Image (cartoon, rainbow, N blue to C red; front, top):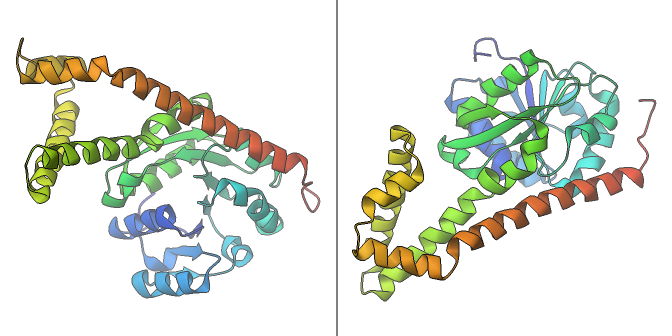
Length: 285
């Protein structure tokens, strides 16, 4: 889908990620008149109108006539939002969920039969057009629907299609992944200060080292073990540091942390399913 052929796209929930997507679309050539956003806070809507020149509306009005609807709300808010818009959402509208942990089948169950749903796990580097998004089609989504989602998300980074069964693991790796790297960067900066470097110099060293290392990994296609070994001379400074990391079981800690993130993603899905079981869909769907 190109900007010239774009039809109306609605973003429900214009928080950080919602704004990231709409700003990326505008940077990539979409027209402000093709995007409608919603938010529960009137002051937030006014801010988006002033900043981007887009249209804002109530959820129900925003989905009428929309070609594609992006759901960018918190998991606990999803079922109420779906029940609110279901009667006014045409069955052929593509619904794209960026809601963590919630399976496509749950969303399909709250909408008109046959509504195409695509589930997405994005991440925050999308704010600088370096995001990583994993896309999984629901029961009624076709290859054309998936292609449309790729075109939308490509405005803010890279996109891959994966089976939905992988989504909890994707959440643990790339969805939560930026936080792990920021955590490592934070620790490295603090270490630099502890070793006597001014904070601004330590920060510059760490940021460029992480950026350069990621670029090297991406552009060479080498396995990270190979690249690490090239830096690790026998008996050298890096070898001494790696030995300490291994002694402190940092590798095992990362595995445990990502398993915890995966498990939490599953818990969110279970909580959403409980919400559905205690709340019957409104209307004749």
